Image 1 (cartoon, rainbow, N blue to C red):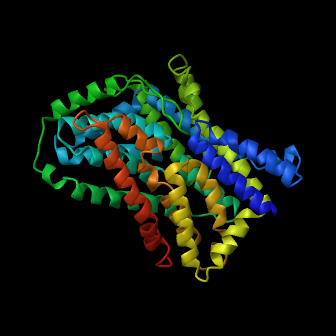
Image 2 (image 1 turned 45 degrees about the vertical axis):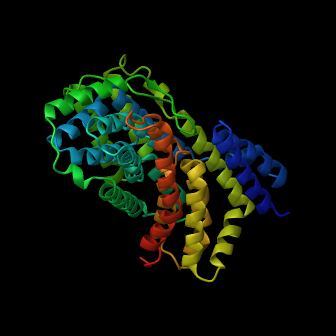
Image 3 (image 1 turned 180 degrees about the vertical axis):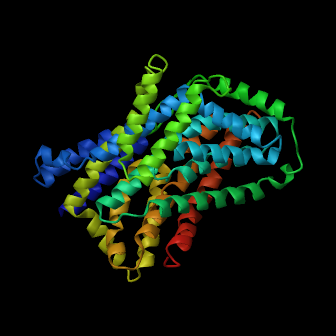
Length: 440
């Protein structure tokens, strides 16, 4: 058996174990990297550890540290509050507010499960009060998280762009982000039209009443919430909703991070952690525990999987699979196969873990000239994340856990499962048809 097959079998084993057992997949990936690297590829331990991306780890630490400060000082609550007030009591716009706020949170660095854990209870609370379809509201939150999740300063975006740069293709950042945002927005439009959104357009509520309910929901969500699976524990704290100095400073910090990293091409990890430290120094006692809320499970996950991804490359597995896909005769067909592999695997496993593995596999397709780098990266990224609506994923499970009392748990589970099946079967095909088939 060749080393590429040993590496592939170990990869399948760690994904299965990480899905079935409550063990961080990053820890499993380190074990697999050690065994395959040392005993199958005759590498020493330093060579095995050389595959970890320090830049990527720093970025994850920096952006989640900055977001934890924004959550603790009430800036996240303020964003939600102001967004709800802006709709002026129009019920039909409330799902879109939840979509937009969740997208904004992931776009500025929140982990997708963290954003869903914060906004999900608020959104589903509105669904109960104003008779909004709970499936529509819950899936709006998840699609919002995925829509904003590939911004250049987000966790998903950082992983994807880092992997693309490592395999020699840069400049795909905005293409991937816009594609993800557009496709998830389109899916939200379909949900809105299919699940009663048009009937909500004539309904109005007192804006003051809606704001009062929002405060209640935010305070109700102020307890610690533990997210199962590969996400981090999410602790949401609620502050007053008036604009304070620390809110302004936090929003300025986010704007400064985006501007410095994008306009001046500075390392996002260093910029984010600098902004977080500056805010922490201004209020040291308030943010003394913010470092504990960094998404350490996600850091371990990405560090371990990126290390194993380097082992896969050393074993020649991505080239082997990519060459096989390219050998199907038409590059677009190989791309479709990879989109389905990413979508189906991610419906049961971690999207964050899958991205560093599946993107390098597409390199032979890109190198052959049949698919553009940004289109292939976007297709794989979106196919591997839109399926997070699954009740077996952290985001889908969070929506199920926060279901309104207007629907039974079993009925809501079936609704989410049926929708997830549709997305898993049709999503990769639609993404491929939109991004790859036209030959952008």
